[in-house]
Length: 285
Image (cartoon, rainbow, N blue to C red; front, side, top):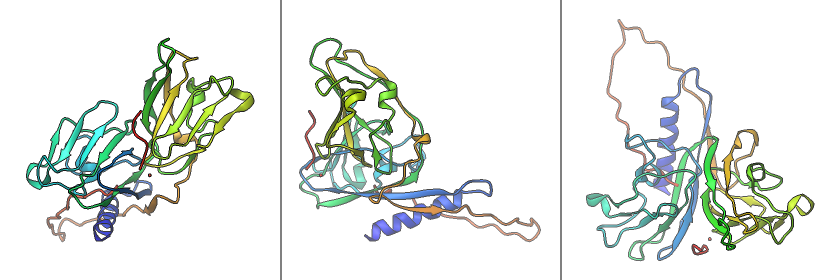
């Protein structure tokens, strides 16, 4: 808990420090995920993250900071990207991250594994609440094999968003169906709940009604629709609200007073590197 409080304080201070007179207020927040040991848990990224290590991209350190455990490559916690198959192991402060996975993406989905040798813990993911258009590219069909096609995705949302009528822009982009038997589906890898689009007469059918922050979803392209579709999700026009599972704080910009050169003094400011904080879930099919 002390780590969480310190992280949120530092994050809030940093956001305020970087704001200028003309900047709008912004909202920072965090969400907690339970990560029991010995299990692979699906995870997606709901926030915009500070580039804490200054490498110009969203790295493992930017998202997870020093929250994961390990002392060597054999007992470290792991993160694996479902899309690329690339993975990295946290091997402690001496070795750092070891592996082929170095950068993370909002539209991708990940497995996190907590090694049984390390204490059971929660992981906090923290960042700035910022909506932006996400281009997922082509969500493929099965190409005529008759098997259908499952694609795992992460959705950058900090609040629960209703699937119906088309808040995820899926139908507008080609997600389709005419009845319960040939409809495309969305399934939560975290809860196992799913919903099928059964056409304009039946609408959405199933137990999954909302998407949730940090959860990972399967999009299933029914074999009745062998071609893929280009999905672009635009949350900017939806006006979705932050859900109760995400704790937030609005940061008001700091107005910096004018400094008179003849009387001003300078001092060095030290910025501490932020340790960004961020159910068993279904196995990858």
